[in-house]
Amino acid sequence: MKKLLILSVALTLGFSCVEAKDYVKTQVREMKHAQKYATTKNVVKNRTQDFDIVSVTPANIKDPHIMKFGDYKTIPAADYNAKLKQDEVKYKEYEKQMSKKHSKYYTTQADTEDFYTLYRVAEKLIRANKLDYMNWRICIKKNVDEVNAYNDGSNLVVLTTSMYDTFKNNDDALAFVIGHEMGHSLLGHYKRRNQLYARMKREQALAQTGNAAAAVVYAGMKRKFLIDSKNMEYAADVEGAKLALHAGYNLNSGSDVLSFLTQFDLDSDFRSDHPRTDKRLDSLKENSRLFLNEWKDMGKYNIYNSEVMPVALSSDRKSMVISAPKSKYNPNQYYAPETMNELYARLGYMYYKNGEFVKSLEYFGELFKIDNTNAPAYLYASYSAEYLYKSTNNAKYLTLAKDYAAKALSLDSKNKYMKEQVDAL
Image 1 (cartoon, rainbow, N blue to C red):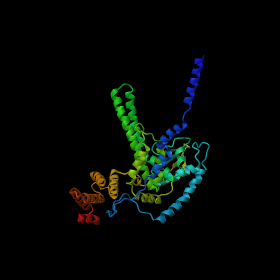
Image 2: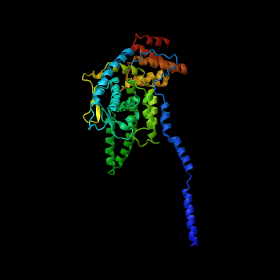
Image 3: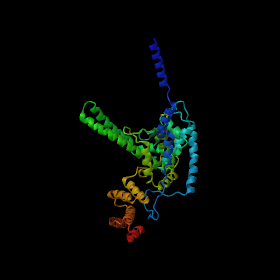
Image 4: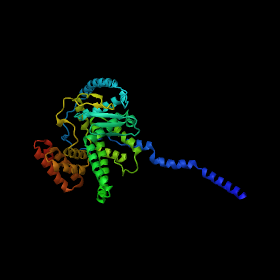
C-alpha cells in the first residue's frame, strides 16, 4: 500500500512537470519564425521596388529620336483634358443606368459603385489600347475568400469579391489585375494551356493502364505544362503592365497586387502552375526598365480619338458587358501583341538608352535576321558598337559600327543622322 502511494505521488508530480510548460520560451521560438513569415514585412518590402519608367541614359549619348514604335500624335494637354470632361458626361449617364439595374436575380449583388469602378478602369484600358474589337465581360464572383482573378475564355475577366475588396480603392492595382487577365486573352493562353493540358491528360490515361512509355512521356509533359504555365503568367504580367501604362495607370501602385500576394507564396513553386510572386515582381521590374515612355502618349491619342463605350448588365446577371462600337476600325488598327520585329527593335533601342550596349547589339542582331530594312535600328546598332569600341578599344566593334552605319545610310541616303555617323567613323 505504501509503495502504491509513493508511485501515485511520483506519477502526479511527473504529470505536473509535463504540464509546467515554459510559454515564454514557446513565444520566443515562434517569434523566430515570424522574422521570416511576418506578412507586413513581406508585403511592404516589395513596395519599395521602382516600376516607373526612369531614364538612366548615360550623359551625352547620341539619340536623334528617330525610332518609331507607333502611329500616333501627341495630344496637347488642354485638348486632352477637354475631351475627358466631355467623356465624364457620358460616364455619369451610364452610372445612372447601372443603378437602375438592381434585381433579386443579380447574383453577385455588387453595388452600382463596385461595378461602376470596374467599368471605368476596364473601359479606359480598352479604349487606350484599341481593344474594342469585341465586347468584354467583367464579373465580380460573390463570396469567394481567395484573393484571385482569372480569364475564362477569350473575353471574360473574373475578380473574386476578395480581390476586388482588397484593391477597390486602388484603380492602378485593379488596372493591373484586369490588364493581366486581358493579357492572357490577347496572348492566346487559354487555348494554348488547354491544348497542353488535354495532351498531358491523354498520356496520363495511357500511363494508368500500365503503359511504361506513356508514363515517361506523361512525366515530361507534366513538367513542360508547369514550366509553360509559369511562363504564361510572367508574360501576362508584362502584357498587363503594358496595357495599364498605355491607359496612364501607375505601375508602382499597380504592383501592390503582387506585393500583397507574396504573403501567400509557398517556399517552393515546383508543383505549382504559377511562379512564386517574388519572382513575378523581379520579372516585372526587369521588363519595366525596357518599357517606352511613348506608350502613355499613344494611350492618350487613342482615348482622345474614341468615344465612351456603353456598359450593360450581362444576360447571365452575374457580369457586365462593355460593348464594342458599331462603327469598326480597320482591322489593322486594333491592338495586337508586339511582333518579333517590334519587340527586338524596342529591346535593342531601350538597352542602348540604358547604356547596356552588348545587350543592345544582341537584340538588334536578332532583328536584322528577320528584317534588314529598318534604317533607324541600324543607326542605333552603329551607336552601340561605337560606344563599345571606345570603352574596350576592340577593333571588331569599330568595324561593326562602320558596317551598320553604312547599311543605315544605304537604306535612307537623305537622312542627316546617317550621314553624320558615317562621317564620324
